[in-house]
Image 1 (cartoon, rainbow, N blue to C red):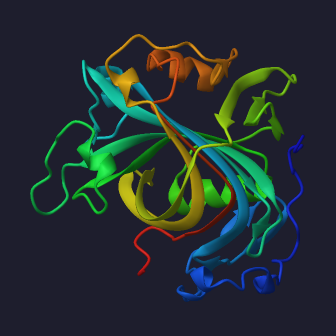
Image 2 (image 1 turned 30 degrees about the horizontal axis):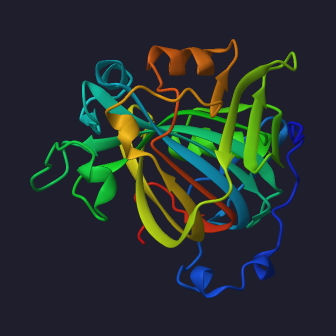
Amino acid sequence: MMKKLTTVPAELFDNLELFPEPFFKRFNLEKAEQAVTFPEQESKIYSFPTLFNQVQFGMGVFTCDYNNAQSLLPAGLKPVKAFGGRALVIISSYEYRKIHQMTPYNELLVVLPVLNTNTPGKVWDLPMLPSMVPGYNGFGFFTLALPMSSEENKHRGLQLWGLPKTLHDIEIGQADGKMTTTVFDDNGESIITLKIPMAGKTKATTMANKLFSEKDGKLVMSQNHLYADMNENKHLSRLFSVSDKTDTVKLGQHKIADQLRFLKLSHDPIITRYTNDLKSCLFLPNQDK
């Protein structure tokens, strides 16, 4: 289990040699203008984009109640529609093994695929299509919950992006052909368990995603870029039929789990993806790419 990392290292790690692949050479590192502050400790100025290498990653694309999803979004954002009054929601987990300037940590992410209606140009509010067409105008993701295991990263996320990061013990392992992630509360009780199949049809995947968050009362947009050979499984018939009720997600008693219950999360994902070697980078809001 990855126990909560409550101690913040005094210095930034000089570990750029951990990122020799061509993917990372595309990006020029720049020091941020804003320092991140920590209780009873010197502030830090990080370089961006943040680089991540050899990440174990698993995700499931689920459906949820459209109106309930809309109620959780700030003005200007709309959930991406599925069918029958449903929207899309994604739950993913990350075992960050190599991070530029930082120690490894684990993370689980709950996001709504969204359309930003304030995007210049026509934003077509069509079912499913925004999530399937690269570069679809106005498309991005809005973070609902982000439990993770690093105190340092919690402060970074809150101060630089306005992300709802919370500190937890998080266990990530492999069992019965699945990547299994469990987030725990302060009493050691399970909040959520996510099980993603590791096998699937392998596909080289390159993506550039827009990430929306609220910082200082304003909607901001960041970008992340990623590359991996993903093992993918599609079950699109679940969009129109009764779910199979697998054990993909198990919810405990916590506000993160309650939020997913409020969304009326589908029992099963319509798409899963897995890789043991994700490469990615994350930019600051409005940072030039």
